[in-house]
Amino acid sequence: MEELQFVWGWQPALYLFLGGVGAGAFLAAGVLFLTDREHNRAAIAASLWAAPVCLGVGLLLLLSELTAPARGLLLWQSFSNQTSWMAFGAWAALLALVFFALTAIVVTRPIEAAIERKWPGFATKKRRIATVLTVIGMVLALCVAVYTGMLLMAVPAVPLWDTPLLPCLFTVSAIDTGVALVEIAALAVHRREPLTHRARKLLERSVVVLVLVEGVVLAAYVGIMATGNGGGAFTHGSAALTAALSAWTLTSGELAPFFWGLLVACGLVLPLVMAVIGLVKDKRSAARQGEAAATPAPEETLPAAAPVSAPALSSAMLVGALGALVGGCTLRFLILLAGQHADLIATSAAQLLL
Image (cartoon, rainbow, N blue to C red; front, side, top):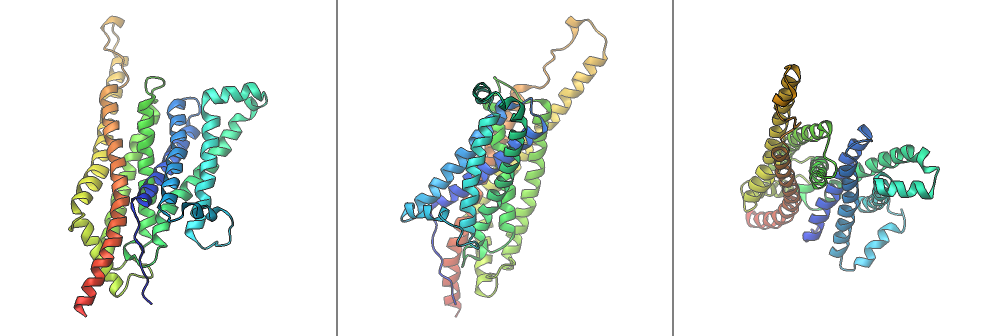
């Protein structure tokens, strides 16, 4: 029995992007917080507040795509359809919103101080409360990141989406773009509290690893779908032709300029290069500091003790982060467009061949 495909608009693509960015930002900020609770609090708090905002806006966009948006609220009424990825994702996103906001509240220092004044006992419990909220939020964030890919994989009659590699790709991309959002948040509050050397290096190394992993998963995804063998229930027969046409549309067809220009060059290569530049400059700066400290000289003859070339590193980090966000958004739009449009092409081609 042939499955009928329905066409998605631009709102779901932005939801997939914003939901992934919000989840990834919470994961990255959570790691920074759990590894160093005393420093980087301004950047961490800004990132934690950005996470529920992104996820909330994404959910509103998804609801606006429905013919009757109010009916979308029925997803949260019961757990009756426990096998539906949409129902699972709706509850995961709702719980994530709650825990994202609660974590941001207890981590933001002015709010934390206000709570201590109202509730004296909070001072002795805030560390444990913040830890529990952060860990639960990170688990929910990972669920939301995975769900953005599972939502498409569960849609029938779109062979390009019918592969376990899609949730893997969207999850890695979500964390990658989340790190980018944390970097932008850190730069926004840099004058108030600059990132520590350790945190900056952790973010830059994370970018290198995540971009390389995302590149490998993306190459595997496109390559496997080009063969028409995505490993899903629909990737056989005429569906294999559809999957192959979808992959061709991405890499060689009308979507190729966006795939190679915005996704690969801007979203992967640019952040990788900027992260490597940041790591190299940071290493050279640390080496110069070590040499200066080891050389006995009058204080007035020592070079300026700037730990890092702040403008250069900030520019590299900003350019790389913006590139990652552009690439992450492009990825969602391309996957949606190629999956839906190639199905129509494949149907027409199959009819002509027959």
